[in-house]
Length: 565
Figure 1 (cartoon, rainbow, N blue to C red):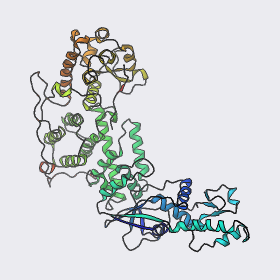
Figure 2: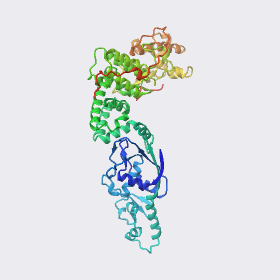
Figure 3: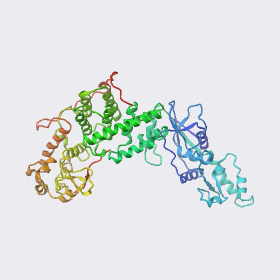
Figure 4: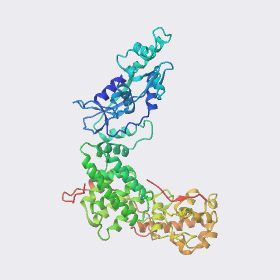
């Protein structure tokens, strides 16, 4: 990394000459006229205005059209401007007004009387002592002539002072700015560096950068992608850009590291094709998740990346599964959720899973996918009630229990109507309810007990209000036995008393463990089996071997609402 000082006007000239270009990962110019005015005011007063960050690389990096008219690129490899686009572009617009790409000039004036920079109104433009800054910035500016033209004579008492002020504006040309030159041929490393800059607003993710890069290369790309994201939101299955781009990158053949979509070898035609495949694959996947897995909206997923394997597989299979495979794929979805499969090493896992989908068929494919999603757990070992201890509403198990309640058509305890994830009646919105109300147990028992999964159930908001803080021994007698059974409440009334609260939790954990075991395709807990030791997974490279004859692959966390009682 090199560090040097240079005249700021020299860097502006480099931008105008095309020896410095804007990489496609950059956003568009976003400054407003007051921002431009404030920049010149800071330079006039000698305030620091930050450093410029340039990227020097041997890679052929796609770049976007700058907001200034640039000369033909130099025969030499250009430098890429990572930080400083807003400042250099603003300076260029004022220094060379004709360089503004859209032709709409920036009219910035300097008031020699007050030493203020002004974005003038129509009336102010008639004031001869509001001098165009572009005039004052020129190398051979004739300050005497400027004042004389404004009607200020040599014998005016302010003539010398105002001349000095204009000379000070001109000296902005010589302002020294730190220029950092970062040398790297690792695109992902540079994108990460750029994402951390966080200049003047929300920190950009790598997904934002890749979307911007695609938009720079594909004229209608951003509108096309934004339209599909709106379609996902309208269907209550919004997905973040990172997950969608990982899928797109896999379908484009560049692997799950979606930053590779920025590579110059992925041209507009390839981007269009990959995006069309991405939309198709996600529609298959979302229909599967909603219909087969009873996942009503994306917030119920433990990770948006869970959509990628079903999308790849269904795209590869043209939306068709063989008999029995839907259940196996559903088991994989629940397993990936339960054990937070994508909490770490997301891209590596997805790359390995994509290779599996291309190279294996039948039960062997699903067995391996499920084994991998199980993490370090021994395959086919039942969940033990102890696995549910110190698990709360934020844990993936809670999401799976919610899905199980929906799949089992659990009914509300007061209305006896099936609970709905998205009811029209606001009073029917699902909330999670402390079976033993907090007000009854928090002074006697630890929060880890009364706030645990084993003390939570799914009921409507109006029923939650009706129960309020009444103890279970009182309100449960008013609820039909089948309603309690649908949410795995121990049927023994003696366990509903406050003094038996720990016993209630232990009994319900046994019931919930088997609800989860059934969803995950695991053996039932038999009351005797101890938790098994975990197995170590082999490395991906040892696990997956590409089969050259294999078929070719074409082309966030929410929860039901909770009201404290």
